[in-house]
Amino acid sequence: MPTSNGPFPWPQPARALNPEGRPRCIGLELEYGNLDASRSATLVEERFGGRLECISDYKIKVLDTEFGDFTVELDLQILHEGDPDDPFRVFAAELGGTILPMEIACPPVPIADACRIDGLCDALREAGAEGTYASAFYAFGAQLNPELPSYEPDYVLSMLRAFVLLREALRTEIGIDRTRRLTSFASAHSSDWCRLILDPDYRPGMERLIDDYVEFNPSRSRELDMLPFFAWIDDARVRQAVPAQKINARPTFHYRLPNAMIDDPTWSVGLEWRRWLNVEALAERPDLIRRYSDLWIANADRFWAEDWTPRSTEVWSHL
Image (cartoon, rainbow, N blue to C red):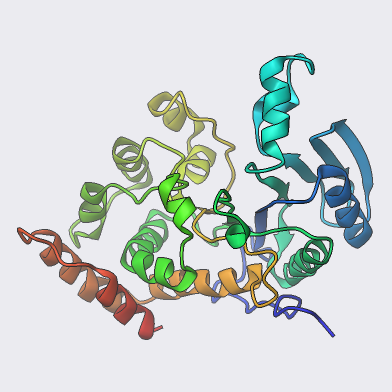
């Protein structure tokens, strides 16, 4: 019997194919504590095959698995470069075991097979991995990178509007950890940008959509980070606008909001996927988007704007 709600098949999105007509894939990044790179990589190898390539004590690749290449690493760049005897590097290594996350970056996996990553989460939990709530010092997250089903600016805009309207409901459903709030793991989008895109008269082409996004949100630190996708569409345009940002261009959303509660048997990445699907569902409802966009703008224009959470939850209830 599975020990969590994870290994069951994930629901398929309404738009199941990518723009090339192939089944959509999803990339995943999982953070956790109390398990080293060696043990973590072995668990990946046991479930998906492949071969281990040790880069350092803190970084191991699992190459040529049935899905592609996984990377397992302690999430701090200084540990992977420079003099291993450097005092700061030694200090960082000691610190890493207590507050820095171990991270597994998964290759793109077909959504139909993605539930198997939840099986990996079960194995990590059984091996002693700790999640977001295990320590007051942890600020661990699970990042979802769903492949876009369309690159048309109207569709991308609908998704962005849907996310803005559902943001507070998502945060309520997820129960964002206090430590993650304090460390600004990912910020909300600029309120001026939200107002801009929710205006029904805003109908940009892709170039303007990118330009407006990077003008108001010149950072990777967003709950829904669009820089990887926009760089994939127009790399030079994005990198010229935000040269200091390290961006891995790819045709996916980069959804950074969920906690990573690997040690909780009632949690799964599949649960976060089902929550994400509400954003995709709202993107297909222009009637709801228009109605609640008008309410969002009217509220934002108040001298004292009210908390949007009740309205966001109301939108959620329609999906």
